[in-house]
Amino acid sequence: MRVVAASLEQVDLEGARRGLVLSLSDDEGRVGLGEATPLPGFSPDAADDDRRALADLPGTLGPIDLPVVPASPGAAPRATAFAILRALAPLSSRLRGLPAARFALETALLDLLGQRVGTPVSACLGGHRRRDEVRVNGLLTTSVALPEMLERARALAARGVRAIKVKLRSRGEEGFARDLEALRALRREHAAVELRLDANAAWSLEEAPRRLGLLAPLGPRFVEQPVAPELLHHLGACDVPWAADESLAVEGMPERLLEAEGCAAFILKPAMLGLLGAHELGRRAQVRGIDAVVTHLFDGPIALAAACELALGLPRPPLACGLDAHAGLEAWPAVRIPQLRAGGLIAASDQPGLGIRPWTA
Image: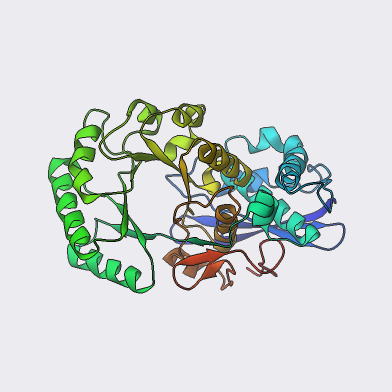
């Protein structure tokens, strides 16, 4: 299979954010879709960087050779990853430091390959081990008034969402005390919900163990990124387990965290890690008994569909994932995301590839 044509379409979003939709056409008329929508202030790349990196395709891509019928179930994901990495090899220097551009290219190529072999992207990633369904988690924040937060929690529960992540937005000791009271109120109303917290790297290495101890009576599954990304491996085991998010994008840090005591989960954002990179980190984490959670970056429908397929293609079932539909999708052209299902679930598309076709910006 050879990519013979490529195009980029820009979608202007809220504020300064822009999304890029990549379309790759192969020599048999298939079209694969990818998306690069870096988040200003969070992503290391910007839309202009990604546009330059994705220019001059397909001439810079190598050929993509993949057997239509793999020799064994386990050979399918290995062959897929090898084929894509080989095709991207001529672009390695251009893509360095641009994870959103890499995510777009890998997604579009996997979409093409899925169409070629007649399977969803999750099956290309995970062979015959792909999941039938994965639950999503809900998202709350302590930056809103407590009555509003509780009302949103009730709405999530009514939809069948069983896991809720709460972003802890307050700062300082007084702010943490307010967050703690809000979480106690939430736990009183929802005693059975799986509770996860996200400190957004706001705590110091010295104060994190004490705060985790104060949160322990609430029974959270884990607290995401309690401390700065480059310090997380020093935290060690605490009264509440913790999870790695931003740290996974720091060079050399995933290897340290795979060995770290207290690390309960890897939070996989393919827009920050690349699609194949996120899948490999999830695989390695699960081998070590560390849970995986896949989340979006509040990006567009193609990126969300790809992240869903990643969650469905991991070797073992992930925890409920941060892949619920979000308000930012309203800024995009109306596109059905076939992986999103009712009842707080995602499932593989019943179409080959991503299942999103055609695209019109």
